[in-house]
Image 1: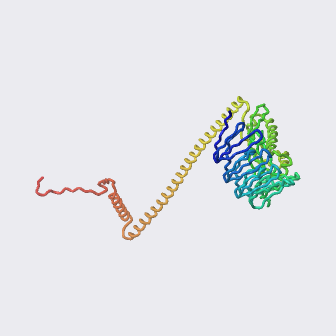
Image 2: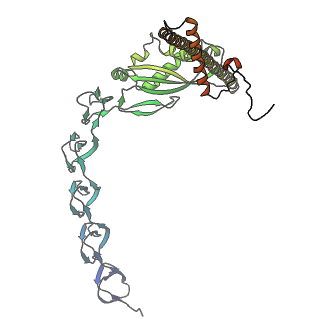
Image 3: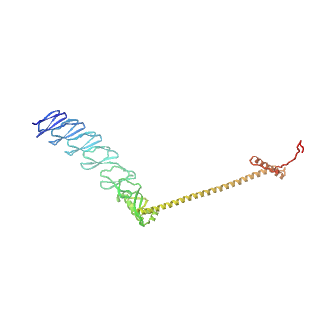
Length: 469
């Protein structure tokens, strides 16, 4: 005896039954008695929120239908869930591109919007922000119907239509006074735009491209890794290092610095796409030829002159043909490739340096000594000048005192004239002079000693009263 199965279904459940020839469903709630030989499977109904939707396929017809929330529903017996989606939410500056796989048609939906796919639609381009077109930004569009290109420069938030694709978002090219660019047009011709021109701020038009050049870079200029689109016409420095060999077969590594400038861009693009590489290669060839004619000693004595003469050859039109100019070249370093030779060279350089240091030291000592001698000479000369001045002053003072005394004596004798004899006048004058001298000595710290003749000293004996001898 075969016992049937009993299924108890909740409100959100359904029972999928499959017999020998058909399928059918029974939705809950309730109880279901399933007869023998009938396959049964419980499955839940589908609940969708307001931001969800699903695609459901009918397995008999192959048709697909869309169910959008919010809702709750059951699948039919011959239906299956294809995929569950979230509603596509577009902001005011966003768009999405959708394609109908049954027809191939494309539609563009812009925000703000909530987008639900139709039965045969798929997302061709996910939600994307529109392009802000302003004074500095433009959009290059391709029309997929006829393949034409169009540059859109009108200020807006740009969304492409179903038959348009954004080929490129272009920024306005702004050139400074020292900058230039090379533009290749759709006919393949070059156009040079200079920063000094009136049109120094512009967008590249459809089918125009900015010519890029790959220049040699690095100290050895072995790889062309420097990409150039904006050409700088200002003078600039460039370092280069390469090997040379002297007449006496000494191999050296020479480091040089070029100070160069682009003067004619039209000539440059006609003759080369790697100006630094060409400059360094040609300079290397010319310097190697010049160094090979000189010995090591001769080269070390005048290496800068040898290199400059090799580069600044008036008959060499190489740089002019390429529209560039070498303002100057300087030797930055000189070293030997062989280590043993380099050691010898270092000793020579060290000895030369020591000799220069000793000469400099001796010169400094000589300058100090010379300065000391000059100082002593100046002191003695000034001393001589001082003595000469003191002598002149002493003579003038003596002359003045003599004149004063002469006038004084003259006036003295003039007042005594007619009353005394010459000898009496002289005695009176001498007496007055002695009084003057004694007065000066009395007011000083000097000790005075007088002889009897000086003071006219007399000794007299007088009797003493009241005493007898």
